[in-house]
Length: 467
Image 1 (cartoon, rainbow, N blue to C red):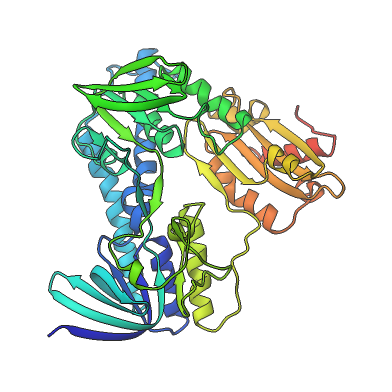
Image 2 (cartoon, one colour):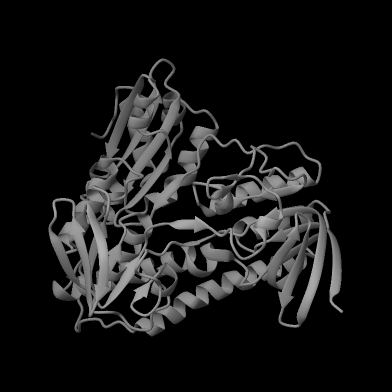
């Protein structure tokens, strides 16, 4: 006979949305049961954001040392022998980072007295599920249910994952480097990983069906990334449709009818992610859908009373920080607080070479909305900190889009080394309703990259100091 559990709140999925929901609800005194079939931390921590950034960091270190060896030394540092890379050891280090964070999440949930069940949940109706665990089967009924099942990589028809055809998950766990790698998809996942593998010495080729790379970002932000790819010998085939893979070659056709046969020991497919809606009984819950996503309102309520959905399951952007923010809000709503999900902007960061950050409206977005704007920018080539890190000559900049009549900030973008660390200041400025004068009135520490934000605001006011 299976065990039965009754709980106030059932959270399905232990990723950043689910575990934050559980932690916040427990803080507020709500009894919580969390079900997760995989490791705690979800895609972001286990097989996405964290491990990919660890590998990108290792690749950057390796390429810096390798280039220094080629040149006989740099910055007064000389090397006596060329560096080598043991990918298995690099992956072991990456796994150590992941394990530490995974254990940290488990510890937080334990201290908060969240009941964590390792197993696969399958719903029989909106408030009841059966969970298959290693010890057998148990059933759970709940007053509130939060669905946080996340997303999964999309495979291409005719190129199912397996063998030499890999997703980002397998790419982050390789034990040896392929000699050649074809990346299908020039979005942020494909170019982040493709650039990292190129730094590690792999011959990388990118195939993209659209006519440009990184289509979510405007051309000015993308140009420095395109220049890096060209400089580092990464061919990019735009407007190309993949036909198939055979005998170590990826076959594709361009829009003008040319056939491509690209040498590739392995093929990394990064054409997008889809919400994980299958295999756990969504069809038994009577919940309205919005296309492929679960339909929710501005409080993440579904069409079924006391059933909530968050994160990748409910639509774009599929970002960890969006899921976590929604989870925190839902927990507070269940505890009786008044909240709704209405951020001014959600930062989007691309960890390519160089990095891109975008918050709020771009100049094109504002123009399409018939808003008269001021657009100003400041180059990192005139920023002391960027130059001291050898990062000032890559064409990077900070750009501000402000409404003309009151100079209120509508959007902020940047491209350059380490600009992801500016995302918090950018998002805060928009959430607080800052104007150009507000940013210009804040004393920014010297020497830092953030001074470029200060200078861009001065440029918008017509009196930049250092350009």
